[in-house]
Amino acid sequence: MTDLGGEAVLDPSLNIFPEPVRHIHLMGVCGTAMAAMAGMLKSQGFHVSGSDGHVYPPMSDFLARTGIPILEGYCAENLAPRPDLVIVGNVITRKNPEAVALARLRIPYLSFPQALRHRFLAGKKSLVVAGTHGKTTTSSLLATMLHGAGCEPGFMIGGIVQAFARNFRIGEGPFFVVEGDEYDTAFFDKGPKFLHYQPHIAIITSIEFDHADIYADLEAVKNSFRKLIAIMPPDGCLVAHVDDPVVRELVASAPCPVVGYGRTPGNDWSLSDVQCTRSGSAFTALHNGEAFGAFTTVMPGNHNCLNSLAVIAVLQRLGLDPAIIARELSRFEGVKRRQEVRGVVNNITVIDDFAHHPTAVRETLAALKCAYQGQRLVAVFEPRTNSSRRRVFQQDYVQAFDAADEVLVKEPDTLAAVPEDQRFSAAELAGGLQKRGVSSHCFPGTDQILDYLARHLLPRDVVAILSNGGFDNIHTRLLHQLEQQLVAK
Image (cartoon, rainbow, N blue to C red; front, side):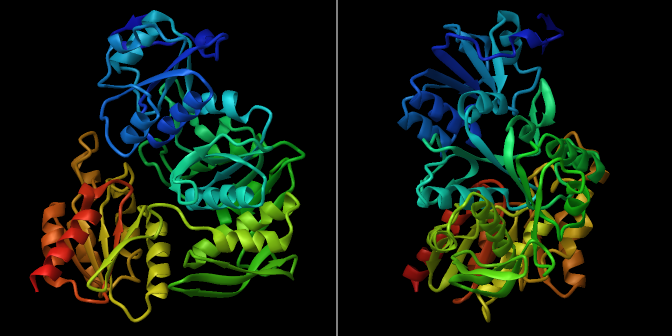
């Protein structure tokens, strides 16, 4: 293993969890999953350290509370004293100076998914939630409801679960719930993360093109899911949203039983009598055409009814009583950044949501429009992902905001590696929306959006802020701005 031209060339024979291990170092520790991994390892008695290029809350605060030292910036000195094992986050490139030092020092290493499988999935029945949309909500539902039913599951999820105020738990029970991401694993393993999770039961919510930085087209995405389906054990089960034609196509070759769910009456599981209001949703779950039970959830929207239905199907297969399933679904408190009401000032409601893919934007806004009937819905959108800052969804976004009464779009930060003619245009989206009759404006930055909102928001308006990032703390700033305006009146 040598340093060739400033790039890390890792020895595959060192891609192991060595024994004994005392000190574990995590590169890219402030990522949501990596910080959770650090906390889990710390709770098992390991000495844990970490480094990151940008040490930032909330994960930096969490790590500080757990007593895990964080080194800001990447350098060879961060590997002194020499750790027994390094876990490499997928934010790390092979040119990262710490990765180069890792190669030169011949320290054993693992990716995050490998570490999760080795330390926390061994001996458990792994319940993996995969799909383009709904992974965080569905896996949070599954973990929380299993916990409420007394099953003591472990879990690792990409969002903060309200019931636990965290995104991980080791758990003493037989099940471990994992949000199965199709994004690549590490610079030394370009396969999707979910191939490491050894699923016993897997949910597939949807399959669409996404992650344009690593997938060339939909066919490449489908190939990743084909690999996941192929590793399902014969005694396992796939719970699949078969109303999605791509999902239906791929699960046809599954080596295990497939349980289909959706809105179509002929599915193994289907929805009936769906009602969505501001307080949530209610529906009847049909199993093989017969009523399995009536259910309620605090989450509004058809997409959340489908997420709930997938979890109901899994829990029924695991032997839970319908009354217990209904009780635990009704108790679910939600997930941070998924239709999360951040505050209400002067009867103006500010909502935070992670939606960024056109389908997620469309479903989220439709749910909010239904929940807040008769009120003006203002959507504030920040294109921030590697896909949304490219033109791949430029036209799809034009049809994704129909439920909004007004749309404000921030010009995205430039992806320097992407040619100018392939970059997303906020101005073009605003123009396309206006042609569809949707009032829309584009802005160069967050300050200009806040200024516009200050001048145009009215009581009873609902502001849905859509971004997969912090969006310059716009939620807190907007609420403070509204409070100041109220005081000044």
